[in-house]
Image (cartoon, rainbow, N blue to C red; front, top):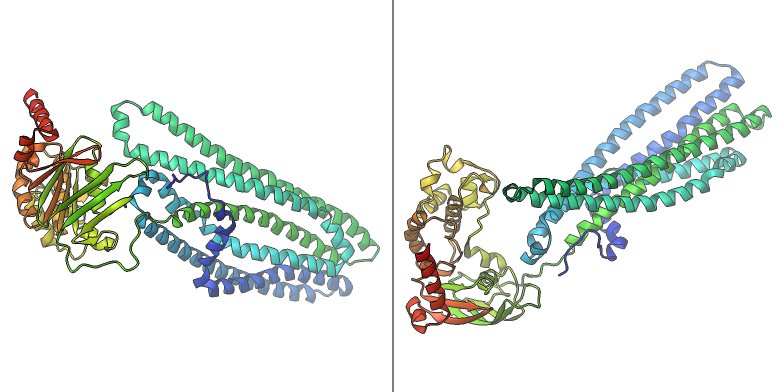
Length: 591
C-alpha cells in the first residue's frame, strides 16, 4: 500500500466525487424537494416585484390615480412578508438537512478509519486523518446547506429574467446581453483558477495540522534538545504557505467580483442610454425601462453568485476527493465472510511455516514454526529486530502473513472473528496509552459489562489500588491526555489492571515491566503469577531474569527461531541464549 498524500489523488475521484456526495442526499430527498419548491416561489417573488412597481408607474402616469400606489404598496408588502417566511423556512430546512448529512459522513468516516489495518496507520500521519474528519468534512457543509439549492435558484432566476426581458422588448433585451459572452468567459477562467487555489489551501492546511499534531505530541523532546527556534521556523514556513494559499483565494474573489460588477454597471448604462431614447420616442414606457433597469442588476448578481458557488462547489469536491480516498481504502486485514465463532478460546497457538514482511518484500519472519499449548508460558528473546514483537502482532491478527498459517485452537486465524480473537487477547505493552477521562474509564475502556467492583478487584490484583486510593477522587480522578500526570510505572500498572478487568484467555506481554522499578516489579510478580494461572502467556523481554521461569524460551535471530527450551536447557546448550545471558550478567555486575 502506497503512502497517502494530499497532492496525489486518484483520477477516478475527479469524475465521481459529486455523485458520491449526492448519494448521501437520498434519505432527505423529500426535504430537498420542498426546499426547491420554496426556491421557485422566492424566485417568482423576485421576478414579480419589479413588474409590480413598473406596472404601477405606467398606470399612475396614465391615470394619475394615487389608489394605484396604495394597492401596489399592499401587494408589495404581502410579497415581502411571504418572501421572508419562505426564506426562513428554506434556510432552516437546508441547515438542518446539511448538518444531518455532515454528521452521517463524519460518523461513517470515523467508523471506517477504525476498521483500517495497523499498516495504514504506520504510513499515514495522524494530522492528515484529523484534517479529513474535521476540516474536510466541514467543507462539505456549505455544499449541502446552500450551494446545490442556490445553484438551482440562480439558474432558474437567470432563465426567468432572460425570458421575461425578451418578452417585454427583445431588442432591448439583446442589447442588455451584449456583455454576456465576456461574463461567461471570465466565469470559466475563474472556476479553473478557484479550483486550483482551493486544492492548494486544503493541502497547505493538512500540512500544518500534521506538523502541529506531531510536534505538540513531541514538545518535551523539542524542549529537551532546545529545538524551539528551529521548529518555530518550520511552523512559520508552513503557516506562511497556508497564508499565501488563502491570500490567492482572496485575490481571485477580489478581482472577479469587481469585474462582474463593472460589467453589470456598463450594461445598465447601455440600456439606460438606449432605453431613454425609446422612452422619449414612446417606443417603450417608463415602467418598462424601470423593469429593465431592475432586471439587469438582478441578472448579473446570480451570474456572479453562480460563479462563486461553482468555486465553492469545487472546494467541496476537493475535500470530498480526499475523504473518499480514505473511505475507499480497503483494510488489508479483512474479516471472513462467515467468521468462525468458537464457544471459548482456550489459547492453543500454532505457527506453521510463517513468513511475514511489513512491506511484502523484506521478511522479518522466515519460516517460523512453533506450538504453544493452552496455559503454557512461553518467552521470546533475541536482539532488536529479530522479530519478537512481530509475532505478538500476528497473534492478534493486526497484520496478515504472506506465507504459512497461524492457528488458534486448531482454526486458521483468518477464519476467526477478529472481534472474538482480539477480545480474548490481553496485551500489556511497554508504551502504555492512557486516554483522557477518569481512572475508572481507562481500566474499563467504556465496557459497561465491567462493573466498578471488577475494576477495583483488577486494580487490587496488580497493586494499582495502592496509588489509586491515594488520589483525591480515587477511581473518579480525572486523567489528562496520555496520562501525563502519572509516572511511567503508574501508567503501566493501570494497563495491567485494564488487561485483568477484560479477563483474557491469552496474555501477551511486550516488555511490560520495562518501565517499572524493581520494587514495583516485585509487587506485581505475585499478581502476575495468579493472572497467568490457566492462561496461555507469551512474553517478550530483554531482561532475561524476568522470563527464567517460563515453560519454554524461544531464541529469535534474524527472523528465525534458532533455539528453544527452558532456561537451564538453553544455558547447557551454550548457544545464542547463553551469550545473551552472560552479556547481561556482565553488564549488571559492571553497573
